[in-house]
Image (tube, rainbow, N blue to C red; front, side, top):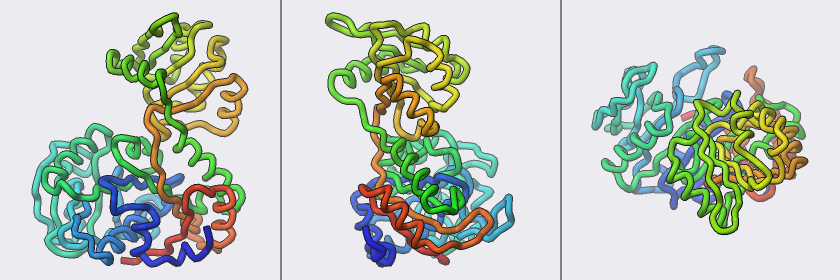
Length: 362
């Protein structure tokens, strides 16, 4: 990847990330103010400039498009949409939008900013997005939008620590936003980004084990954990019903023994969850399966401990990360030279395009 990529026209952005063939896309960031809304503005502009006939449909996990950061008070990029765009946003946020909006559906989904409402823009203009927070609510919003515009590209603008809304099944593909807020040191930024990307792109389980696990999940839909113990013909399935994963490592581990070859965990898998499991001697030489890469919140040291125990970490559903976008701005608003950061990122990340799209002042 060369620096010329960063200077591609906005229309080329669609080809670079393969957006024209998608039905849904999630934008997620490694930190607060990573640049997700700027990426969204670039996509909107590129979509319009390339003459796409499919409408865009937008929502946000959290709040996006406001004039200034609610914490720091610094200006934030606003979201400018063309006429015909669909949005799913809370009623309180609609009052701060200047685009002419037609209300199409009430979702009965409640947020801190009011009920989420499905609207169509009847004019170009600025909007604020404050959408649903739960995965099942996003599925509901997606279904409503598809009934109105079956061919729309549904874009979910993520929020800090809410990566699970980018999970496989919720969106087809992901764009990852990184900024100098994670680290102003190019090499450290590249190291952290590459590791986060490796978690997001954790490979999927396959073969007979996948078939056995999918069947077990189907038969035990509310289980927080599932253990598969290999047998002569069919694996023994142990369902674990727990209120959460954290604090229940011992309860999970006592269901494992020397014939255990797979442990499936539903929910966020953190350093604390893994540290609890590592205390148990039977948590060794097996396959650990999570729903997808957005459920992994672990550090490199935890990953090394898993490798030492011969734990093969895989996911049920793999994520398709299409693009890594750099925002060379620190948390205090200082703009740094993007070139050293781009070089460091591209040395570490060679299988996905890494770009700096630049500011978007729409």
